[in-house]
Image 1 (tube, helix red, strand yellow):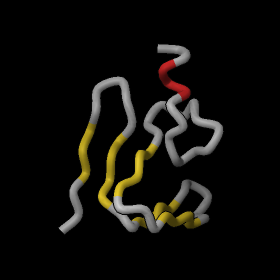
Image 2 (cartoon, helix red, strand yellow):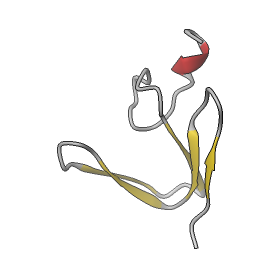
Image 3 (cartoon, one colour):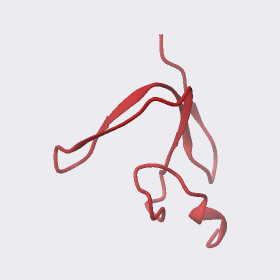
Image 4 (spheres, helix red, strand yellow):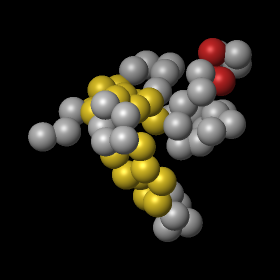
Amino acid sequence: MRRVSLRRKGPMLVEGPVEVELEDGAVVSSDRFRVALCTCRRSRRYPWCDTSHRDRA
């Protein structure tokens, strides 16, 4: 079972490894044990969170 954790004003944490399908159909993957997915779309590494939301919160 996968665990997804939502954070107010922060990323969505997902237990990995994980594959993410983007809007254009492209698939990106990570083999890390936990990944942070950007929910604000400010990340320069979207869909992975790079904490850009902290600069503009």
